[in-house]
Every structure is written in structure tokens, then in C-alpha cells.
Amino acid sequence: MLPLTVKIIEDKRSKDAPFVAYTPELDVASCGPTEGKAKENLHEAVEILLEEINKKGDLTSFLEESGFQKINKS
Image (cartoon, rainbow, N blue to C red; front, side):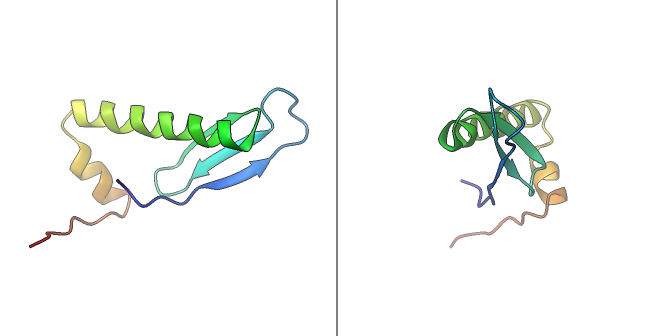
């Protein structure tokens, strides 16, 4: 599990999906009709992103470029 910051923004101009969930570490955002749904959609978007990058074999590089460090647990 990655430690990610989740920022919630409410855009009152949007009637269908006024809540935006954003994680700056990966620069990924999603939206929803409620704060909870926006977070759920963000989680799904992050999973899809990481799965696709992993399929390409670039996950370690991507995470390092995003500021994450591998910690060896002994």
C-alpha cells in the first residue's frame, strides 16, 4: 500500500459530480457525486494507472520518479 495524500475539493458549479479527489504524489484525480464516491473513484483510477504501468515493466521507475523510495525490511 502506498502512502498517498488525498485532497478533496468541492466544485459547486458541477451538479453531477461536484466532489474531486486528487492525489498529488501521482498527479491523479477523479470525481463523484459525494466525497466518498470521489475517493472510491480515485482509488480505482490509481489502481488502473499502477496496473498499466506495471504491465509495461516500468512500475519501479515510475514510483521512484514520483518520489517514493524502496525500503528493505529485514
